[in-house]
Image (cartoon, rainbow, N blue to C red; front, top):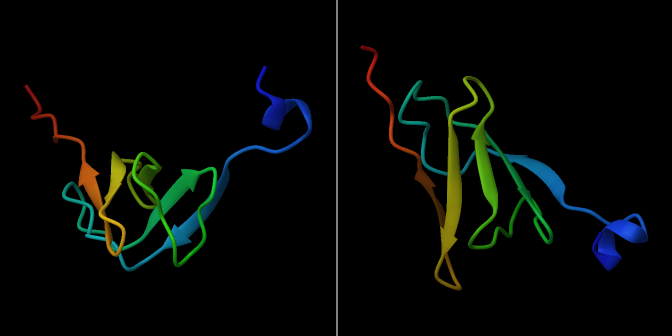
Length: 77
């Protein structure tokens, strides 16, 4: 158990609508979970999940901007 978890600190989740739309359902909102997230500041490695369909991705950032690298969409077989 990490010291953060031991003392009741854990990752937080915010919902944002300024990231790239979900490639699976084109929804414009995503829930982002990470250690230092706010609605205005996301960090590389934070987890992103489409608020509508649950499609997952990961935040990438360059110090000034942040965006979602969405997971590949699996084709139905």
